[in-house]
Image (cartoon, rainbow, N blue to C red; front, side, top):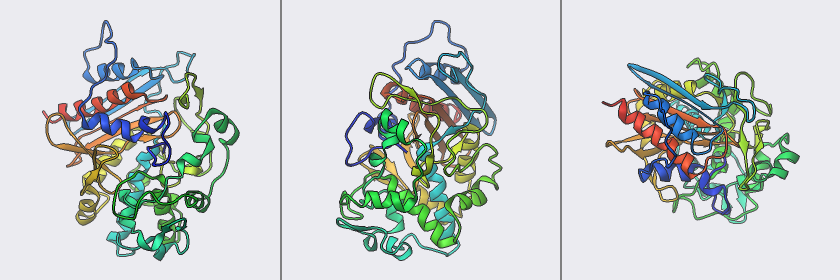
Length: 385
């Protein structure tokens, strides 16, 4: 969830979505020190290179019609020497947005709502004040980040400092409270005139899902995506602060030179925008099904993958998916995720046949994120050959 916001300009701004996508779009590679005796497996070499940038733990999985490869490096808990878990669970952060966009587009395909519906139609009076006007903002603009709605993430103490984390890591938030907090600020720009990443957009999308269906966002994601795809290690934790099952600890430094363990967190501040827990394996299954046409009808998948420039990121963005150039030609789709000490990057080819997911369990500096984007790029290019 910790992504670039219009109001905040601090050490976290370019360590999330923007840094990863900018690194990917410019073809930058990791600057890690090479190991003396790297293993022959290219994926293991790339995971080792990512670990050498300073990550505590790294895990990756790559799939294609004839390939299923995984690799790990580092430790599951700092100071223990315990190996990273096989298929460990993690907070996938903003990769959650692709799940939310998928549910919205399913509802559109069922004729229960339209991308041109306004926020005001479904949530009367919710987006209002300080120049914000839900009557001028469409569902499409929410999913594409062209609404101009301010990002609530800079207002959440647990995500923005060690003291705030310690004091408020168990705090419960409601979607209405989160949107109300964002409405204290004026819009970044008139709807549809620019692009700016805002987690509030997807909190509102989750609220609209609830209004359209009469059921919670979590229940719709579970019934429409998680259970049909048999994503056994994927969950919508609600307010539950722990990660159940095999997992590595997450660490965050909050822009300082000292990181702390941030594994425990009530993720209610990220409903619809960043709260899902999953694994690299389940994310690969999800991306394969999504781009393979198993979750959306062709018209809705076209809507999702029709991208426009996202100048803030240096790439193109559709509805809950980014489109990133491949160094070997063409492009792929994906969405990075970050939620306190867990950074993930996943990519899938347009036909859904090749996927790559990598995650790290500590703050992802620029070298780490370049290594992650390089891994995804080279693995997707490698499986094309």
